[in-house]
Image 1 (cartoon, rainbow, N blue to C red):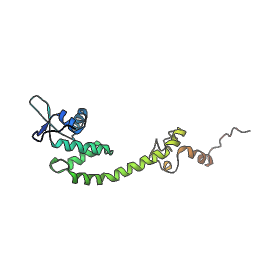
Image 2 (image 1 turned 180 degrees about the vertical axis):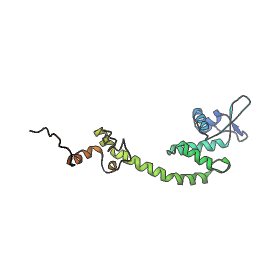
Image 3 (image 1 turned 120 degrees about the horizontal axis):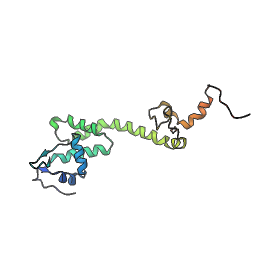
Image 4 (image 1 turned 120 degrees about the vertical axis):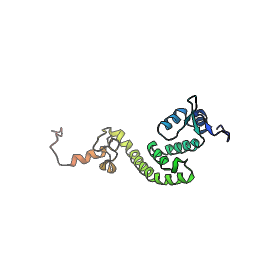
Length: 164
Ligand code: FES
């Protein structure tokens, strides 16, 4: 990773990209979303203060664990006087985000556990399929393909059996 001299207080987008590992397009995107900011030179080139390195590292770390950009932006906006997040901030926010991540992990486990049955079934029913309707109550108990025999036992209109 290229070193940036300590005497350099402002970074070009290329320097920030090289040092942070984020693509230039990603940095522009972060800026458009208000996650980092820059000033412009007289030649209209972007210049970032050195603390943008820490902000980009923070954003990338949070993204890596699945935190949405809007949530990251809100967290950064809550810091006093828009200061750069430090170790204590990261510890506090990661504790807040833990519950959200646990919930997502639980949902992913459920989806993973039903995936094989769903691929075999293929109905993608909005009423019963855990893939089409991940919050479905029945989806927690069983997948649609297993509901079929249960539905056959439910009272309802006479079904032709096809048997003489
Ligand atoms: S495809 Fe998911 S229950 Fe049928």
